[in-house]
Image 1 (tube, helix red, strand yellow):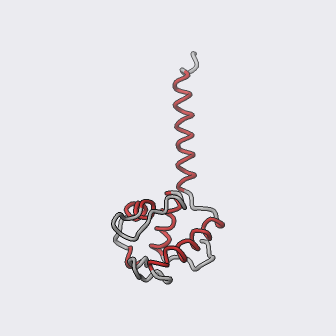
Image 2 (cartoon, one colour):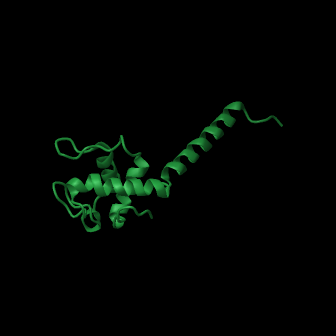
Image 3 (cartoon, helix red, strand yellow):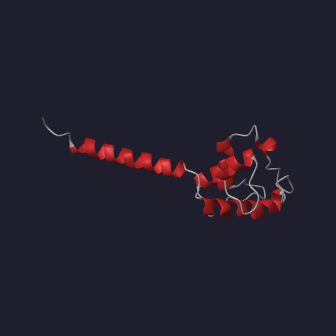
Length: 117
């Protein structure tokens, strides 16, 4: 029997690498980074959305206010901001998986300052 062609090996290795990268990106941030993100949201986002996230210059970021909004749309807003508004993009400060973690945490009730889940 002949061994599989080199192209098959390369394709399998690339597929495994992409699967591993996707799994790592989809994982929750480590507890230390979670605390950093909680602090960022409480301080930086709270300056516009209210220190309790109940709204201010920006809308409320509480679970009931976010319940019907699509996660991917909110992640895009966190990453890229909203042109023509005071909402800046945060892509310089967090990755897209971290932004998704923040959005999901906001949707379930954001941790208090200094906490991680």
